[in-house]
Figure: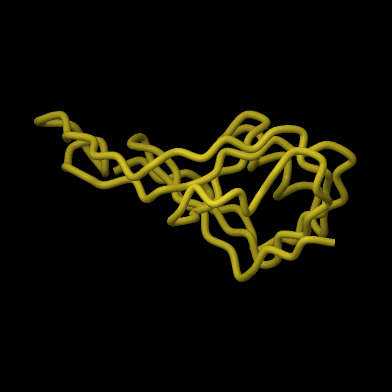
Amino acid sequence: MSMCRPVGPINIEGVIKSAVWHPESFIRGIPMMSGTLGVDRTIPAHYMVQLESIVVSDSEDYRRLLLNSGDVISLSHAEDDGFLKAGMKIRISGLMQLGDEGGYDTFFDKIEIL
């Protein structure tokens, strides 16, 4: 299994440029593939958030996060309830990301709306 170097924990503050909620989804594994790519898995409901005016606690870890995810951060959230919206200033505390060839899982301690 090919593991990517973990990211975090880091703290990120920024203004939400865009926030799109995605419901839980199921991905079927690909037979004979290694890591999570080879197993069936459920992706929890989440927001895909793009931030601007970003301040981070660890710029090296943040660069790795961008390499893994592009300029969006996946933040688990069970409901499409408008919790995160464009224009909000937020702080994500304790953000961590782990992954392999099958994708990345992002974890955090808390999100504060500032």
